[in-house]
Image 1 (tube, rainbow, N blue to C red):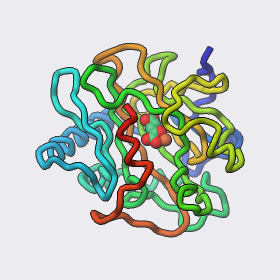
Image 2: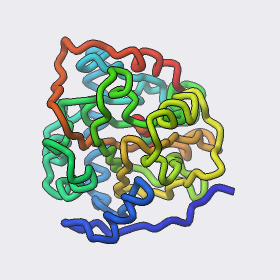
Image 3: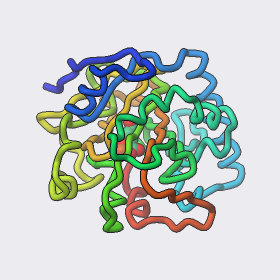
Image 4: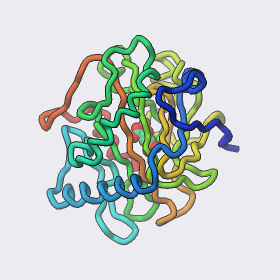
Amino acid sequence: MMMTNYQRFEFSSPLTAEQKEYFEEYGFLHFKGFIDSDRVALFRDEMRSIEERWIAAQVEKINGVPIKYGTDVDGRPIVQRFAFSSQYSKTLSDFLNNSRLHALFPLLGSQAENPRIGENEKDGLVINHYINASGSNFSKMGWHTDCLRDVFYGKKIQPMLNVGVHLTDALPDQSGLRLIPGTHKQNTVSLLTRKLYFFDHKPDKNEIGLQTKAGDLTVHDGRLWHRVAKSSVVGEQSRRQVMYIPIISGAYAIKNENSPTLFYQRFQKLVR
Ligand SMILES: O=C(O)CCC(=O)C(=O)O
Ligand SMILES: [Fe+2]
């Protein structure tokens, strides 16, 4: 039986001591209603506008990161994974530079250097559009942590947070995002081998299913194990749209159109 009874919070700037303690213990936080429904609609419109431009221009990669395409239930071609989307939308860029998000920086820990919003680093502002339908190329995502890349390059893992802005409602008790609380405290061996990265989709007895509504904000530690479960329903009801903002630290690593495609990004094509 999947756990869904965990604590939800109201966002406050600065964060409360209770919120910081919860994050330290479990490695994630869920805030209700970070943006209102008008904002949600606005961001979904922006998605659509970026998508039309990328489809017209047949964009394959942005700054080396592959863009995932698929077909919607009505046969329309769609973008299913956007990267660096705020570079194509002033509305989204302004949102990223919204100072309310800076309230999350302390969650990186007191040792973190240069805490910042990674608008032009990592994959920038990612938008995931899942749908469980025959033409879809994206309906689930296997177990992973978000800091594999640092390990790959033999670098010291820099504190990072992945901040989700949810644009659709999760269906009760079968929401997409599943995570294993507390796994951000694991050692490097466990970080690398606890599960087979991206290919393992098996439920974990300790996973929690986040019950997110459109407008909610979630934040998880880059070392926390998580996945996105496939919807148990098909078609329109299975649609799930969520933006991810990287909050990062350490040396700057700004990407541009000459940035290489990383090894693990190549095999993400296989993830559907
Ligand atoms: O779509 C989600 O909620 C999670 C996506 C994710 O884990 C990722 O893009 O790294
Ligand atoms: Fe992730």
